[in-house]
Image 1 (cartoon, helix red, strand yellow):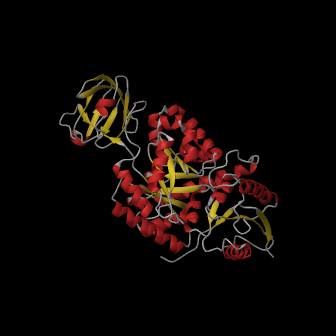
Image 2 (tube, rainbow, N blue to C red):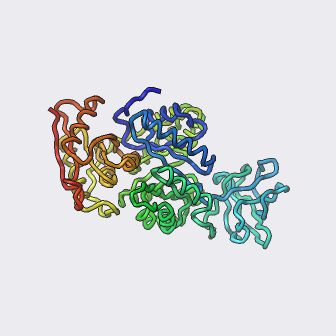
Image 3 (cartoon, rainbow, N blue to C red):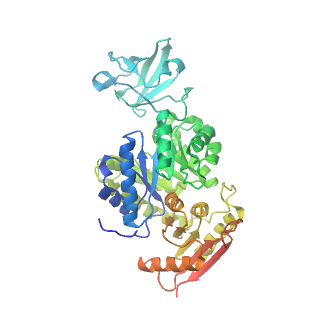
Amino acid sequence: MAAKSVPFPHANTKIVATVGPACSTENQLAALARAGVDVFRINTAHGSLGEHAQTVQRIRHVSGLLKRPLAILVDLGGPKIRLGRLPGDAIECAEGAEFRFVRGVESDSPNDLVITYDKLIDELEVGDHVMLADGIVSMLIVEKTADYARAEVVQAGIIRSKQGVNLPGAKLSLAALTDVDRQCAAWASVIEADFVGLSFVRTAADILELKELLKPTDPNHHTPRVIAKIEKPEAMANLESIVAVADGVMVARGDLGVEIDVATLAVAQKRIIAMCNRYQKPVITATQMLDSMQRGKQPTRAEATDVANAILDGTDACMLSGETAVGTNPVAAVEMMNRIALATEPLFREMPPMGLPQVLPDGLKLVTQVTVHNACRIAEQLHARLLVVATHTGASALAVAKQRTFIPTIGVSDTPSSLRQMCLYRGVTPLPEVPAGDVTKLIQAVETWGRNEKTLATGDRIVVVAAMGWTSTGHNMVLVHELA
């Protein structure tokens, strides 16, 4: 596979792609990256750590070949409750039929269902709803004893072995991190994953627990950023406190759409994205965005509209799950998502400029916030070709992303991990091997790169945001450079 530098630009909206059997080889991963993938998601709910380690090596190798940072999101499985083994592996549940949830690991009776969560019988209450098969099948608990909970089917369908179980409204004592999650989180830290996703978050304390687990003994060691997956009613109730402590958020619409009334899902998505933008945290919108492209060549009109609306809501990234992991044409799904984003993003030019954010996140100084805000306005008024941000941690690049400027932004850093994490920031293209600390050399390097990529030409303007000597007061310099 020949080395080739990144084409510029892709859409401003970033694309997260789940790695699976359909895209696990190096050539397949490279094709996805060329099509527009910025972040590769590794789902630890499937496969072994040995297999995932090989995937990490392939992604890092592709990144080197393409001369382009690519980020890795390690998604923890979380305390997912699943059905055990069912007789014949599938049972049809007719409306009005009765089933019993019983203790054990396997059932011999088609009307007795076993669950992977040992305490389920103890914690269920009469009146609780049990949702199965991604919410297709719904049961109501009508009786509870010490040994079983009897349920009546109120929404018919077919259930299968090992399918997920959702218990909206039930008060469960499940820990946020399972033993398997702790093992996977430790592994994610060792392989220097860029992001770690925490499933079934309920409170800010869940996020802080994972952050403490990921904290390195060496302060100079890379620390993955924690992504809070919002998929529980408790998370919606505690949304602001969760967003405040998380490094990013995922609108995990699969389980969220089962745990809450599906009629309120779109409103919940808008609320989550708005909260993330208020706190200047990157946000990913996920699940079934182009689901029909797992099997077909085109998305439905509703799916195309869904992606566009998520972008207009202000999401930083859209995620593909089964479309890339097991779909028949992962590259086509990525290309389609990129096309929808490119068609949607020009509408931001017609929107009024964003004001100065009211919430200053950790790691971002007020001087930097004000400088970045006004640099974006300068770049737009001068019709600059590029906005360049020199940043150590990436915080100032994220601040630019949250301004929703339509000027393409280049992020440069002296820290490789910060460059990779910029892959999740809307509209920011991380550029490696650029001297971030010397403004003169930085401009020369960006100009050379831009001319080689045919992105920059004589007369184009570049607006640079930097700090004079990496001062403790933050980014305090805006410089305009016109190519001679």
